[in-house]
Length: 180
Image (cartoon, rainbow, N blue to C red):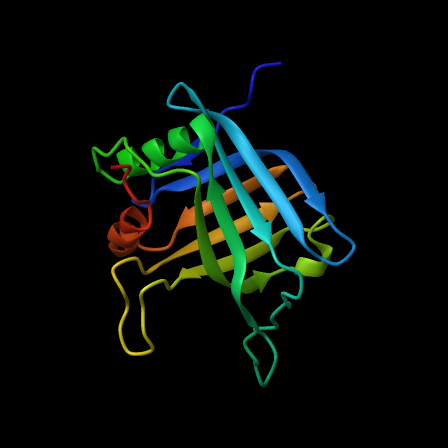
């Protein structure tokens, strides 16, 4: 059976991906590994996400909201030809001509749960806001700073990686080092 298509939606001016899940593993301790792959611009593209145990849900409807965030809670990885294909497609969609990337690549995020419970990720959709803060300080965003949304729906076997704001594209591109 040929791989499914990765759907790219740019209708609202943002670059949003809907990626079929080809492998997932959730441990009893709450760690998860999710790999998505499919055809993107005629090539097989692949991306993986590792989720650390201990991420807590947030109740934004509560009277006194306590924001639960986990530093390095989610790690995105790109490796091999599938990772290069994903990085190439992303940079192409962002208007950059780059085709050379230093792989394997791991990008770590502070993760905030927007909906769902990460402890039940194998049975319900969980939505996250991701913050890539490498090189940033408390006072200033660094050149690799960006934010994205990640929705993981293991019951329906897909993940969505959605752009938060086009102003963060430079940070995304800076976080994908070029191969020398």
